[in-house]
Length: 225
Image (cartoon, rainbow, N blue to C red; front, side, top):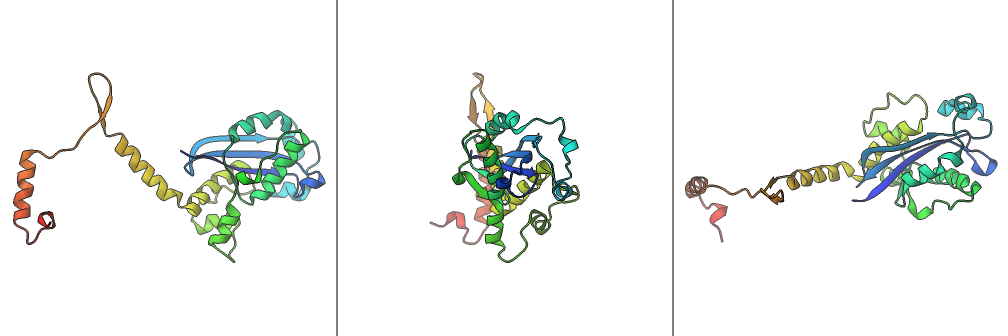
């Protein structure tokens, strides 16, 4: 199964090169593009002020983060959860730029661009010329937005996971996977405890009834060469 990570950040501003910092990181684990329920979440003290315009967007002031760890204190857990697979985000270059600025500040290797999957780019390719913000995509796919009063990285991840499923056809793949799982679980235990397939075979009575039914049909396909 393919493991990918869908993630989002909240920041003190829009420009990491101007000293703006990450204040929240959230991530969800996906297997074959479907959420598993496992997640990572951290609020982070940015060691700088949070401008009012940014606080209005995500709802965090510096007072909210006074007792939170610095990025250096959460980086190991974050990178361990990220693993080495693909990383999915909406407007992914923005989130990659901020995390890479934080990693560079600590002298750590950056997240390589070949790991990036940008759902904004996917949405623009599928819906050219249309609004493709996370809110717009949720409305387009009838995904409930009622809990989203401000930007919140963990909630945004959960919404984006539903959007990503719709963008990639993952829901259909999920149905196939579920069917395969059910089929794989039609097994029995022998006295030795070994799981073996349970064949479904018609009885002699059932075969006879089927033959009688076929005999009453005109040119049945079962008897055609």
